[in-house]
Image 1 (tube, chains in turn orange, purple):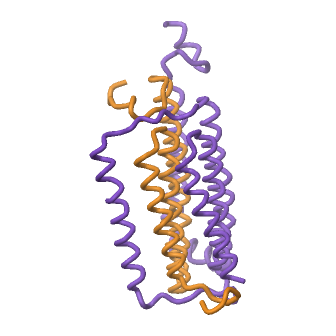
Image 2 (tube, each protein chain N blue to C red):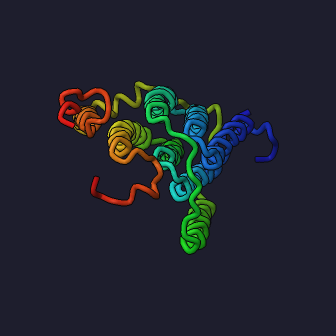
Image 3 (cartoon, chains in turn yellow, orange):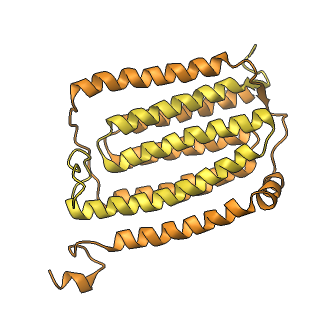
Length: 107
Length: 176
């Protein structure tokens, strides 16, 4: 990293970016009070992990890491569909999206 | 050039993620998340994963985030209420997050074996990817299709069972 126009970027920077995004996802999961935004923070954490998978795939010249990201994307798509359906069902039953008001298992 | 692109789009990623936390309206958070995901697609491309970059844009920034914005608009989600949670958890939670980041960063920075990424590195083509996926990992791939099918059926089943106060299930709303 001698000059700004260097041709190479250390992979450690990618891993640090991944860790930072993951931490922001955790913080969002903890401080956001809207059910949908909490769900978005989970997606952010999944994306952060995907970035480190791709980085390690590049480091070890393995295709498996990228295939794992592919599977994570598929599972995330399924999770988003089911999770948002659950959010719609909760909203119909409670008429609120605030996580503080949704504190009972029973509808 | 690689470094400039990396810094630019890593900055977009971090700015989008921080904006997601700061916005109080869910639709603004959703749009910030789209910025994060699109920037991540560029970073995948810098790392030579061309198929994943396309899939990131199509699946994440396209399909999943459209679903999110659709639900935000459908439920008319307004400004979130700021409830100040218990102070003890606030006092415990943030140092815990900082500690997690510190541990991860220490482990990463102590790793001496990590190499560098350059634009001249080879690109993992879709052919390389599909060769492994369809030869060695065919069974997990097919199981994934079953998972998607189950998710579709589950989403439909969950979203249909309202309490009669919503449009879409007329035969039950008559009884109430």
